[in-house]
Image 1: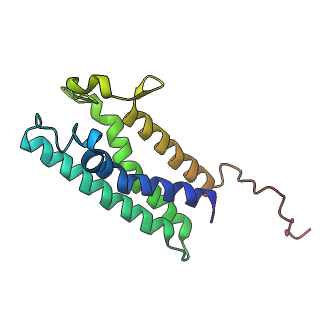
Image 2 (image 1 turned 135 degrees about the horizontal axis):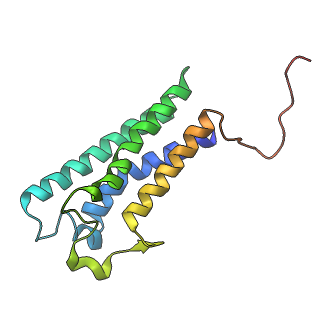
Length: 155
């Protein structure tokens, strides 16, 4: 399995499970999202919509990345594009008026990494992994496997 494929599969796994874990399953995080009593029903509706969307996009990206048929590179590039959607959207969300990466009552429990909200940092890491996978798949980055392959070109 190529490094590009491994990177895309890893991002697909995080995309598939991440929002459901953070917004619904992990109690400390779910209290800020699906189980936040201060959120009105319409906000919870959009959170549920986001969770379902990321599961579907993650699974679709995973299926594309795992299929091993002719045209695999194109499917891998398609998987990277599909998987980039929710993470790119996360980076764009704070640009809208009245939005915030966390609610004020959770300021003391919000994780920041290198000065960035944890979710924004994660989005940047995953988008960087997808960009690296695309560059590897297109041959723009070298991928060394520890030893040189024999040169099979005709001389």
